[in-house]
Each structure stands twice: as structure tokens, then as C-alpha cells.
Image (cartoon, rainbow, N blue to C red):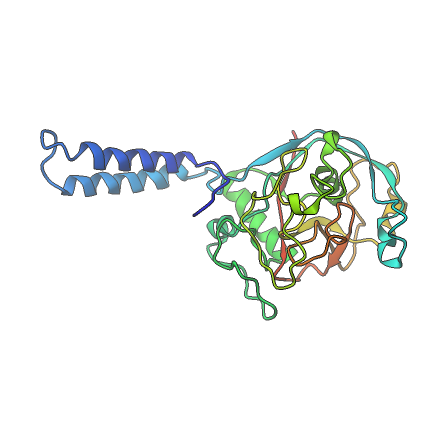
Length: 293
């Protein structure tokens, strides 16, 4: 891959080390005379690579710690008075506990390592980087993501999940280090986001500037699923709530952050999108979260 923001796993390091040893030292005729020894060493390396990777988090998901705090969620900007933005109001105080959130959006390469295949085909407008393993995975429904998380947790023994809408917005704002930017990491959207291209495409993660917590692509690139059901007036019901998790039921799930396809209004930290949980769309992906124990 041309760009890999994820650290190598122990098994990958082991494979590289043994491969270098085989090609460097086994050429010494004082040690071994036959080329078959090279092949044997590489075969052993491959076996050890698989063995060392058993039970390891080979998808190499990097998580950022977010210290919990109280903050004001939503928007009171008088520029956004249309009914479309009513669900961003009122600006209200909530509290969130500490947690972890993905430094990057989950990539196509990570998806394929866990699921074994590319996402389900989408019969509509297509996206360009469909073979880019370092780009965020898209065309995945909320339901597909739950299956991915189930398999990932079984493989790693960890407890990944989707972030709640509150966790997502708090992290996008920069957590306790927030500078009150309109977008995640800047008031200048071009610094932090791929956005506004109707005929655009996803891009490798981590190429734009990070936000105050060193999290990338929370604005643009791929829109991101949250765990919550969508509630039009939920903000009015969650004032001063601790760790709000959305309505108990609904028919649409929350999307946040906007995408390469969306304009700068949709890409604001406070904009609330929603679609049905079985939606598979060319610009919808996700990032992971995890409880802080």
C-alpha cells in the first residue's frame, strides 16, 4: 500500500525479520549451500507469521483516549434558522465519561481482513477508490457494521463498538482541548476535510490535518455511523444528561461528519444526518469506539 497510517503487527515484524535473514545470511556458502534452504526459511516465516498473529489485533486499529467532561452540544448559530436545522437545537449541556475513539476511519483493508470480502455492491452512483485499502470503507450499512464489530471482537478479545452521537460530537469538537472550531480541527474546512465533490471519491485516511485530539477525517471523507437511533427532538429531552445514548427506538440511525460528497454546511461538527440502518451508500463508513475501563 502506498500509505499506511497503522503500526505493523508483531507477526508482520517477525515475517520481515526472518525474510531478511533468509535472503541476507543464507547466501553465505559457509553456512548453507542449497537454495532450498532459503525456501524452507521463508516457509517457516510464513507459518510463524500466522501463528504469531493468532488472537492479535492484526487490523491494527489505533485508538485515541478521550477524557470525559461536560460540554455544550448542538448549535445556537442564528445563521441556521431553517427547519432543516431544528434538530441541532437547543444548544444544551451534557456530560460524557472517558472513552476511546478511532484515530482513523475504518479502512477497506481492515474490513477485508475481518470480513474476507469487499462490502456488498451498491447499485447506484459508484465511488472511485473501490480498491484503495487505505481509504475508508464505504457501502456498509449500520447492520453490516454490527457484524464486522462482532467478528472483530471475537478475533481480538476486545470490545469495540460504534460511538454514541454524544461521544462522536465531543471528539469532533476536540474534547477538553476544543478550540470551538466549526469543523473538526479548523474553521478552514480545506485544511481538515475532503468535501464538496459530487463526482469525488474517498481518499486515504490521515492525509488532512488532525483535530485537537489528533483524530483524522472526522470532517468529510466518509460520513460516519453512530450507535444511536435518531430522534428529531431528542436534544430537548437530554438536557444535562450524563452519557446520553439517543432514543430507545426509531427507524433511522445517526450519521455524522459529512463526506467527500457533501457541502460545508453538512460537514459542520453539529450537523445531524440520519438514514435507515440497512442503507448501503457510496459515501457512508464508520469509525470505532471503546469503553474506558
